[in-house]
Length: 190
Image (cartoon, rainbow, N blue to C red; front, side, top):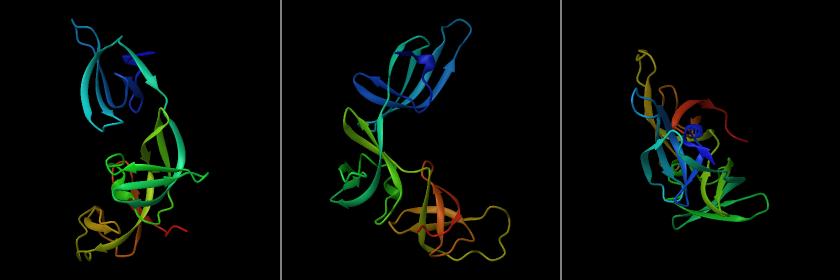
């Protein structure tokens, strides 16, 4: 068991038998009152979020989640199937992988991490940097050199992101999967 002060961002804690990931943790100490930890939590099973306050010395159970490498296989009727190296299949609903869903494309070869809680897969994490191809974007605006000029581009699964003005149709780009932001142009994956 750890005290609330020892819990950091991205730690997973057990609250009422459910795993919650800490998205934000702020320590606050005011003059007269006791020290507190303000936390923003996300339930890994339901996806709901909560902001709560704990006393500085409240005891919390930290959970270590098991992770294994998987690759995307296929989807059918809002169910996404991932496979590990031993050809075991793990099915997740669209709700379970809502945060990474915009970057799931047929034929992707990214090695993802399947996250397990009590033997059940609860989510999938993509690599931090992923490479995708632009299927549509408008032409660049001539003469606009005022700085970091961005425009909208569409990926093969319909996801739209902002890219640099010099990116064109069929260009491969790097995307930060945590924020969904364009990073740079890239070479086609092999």
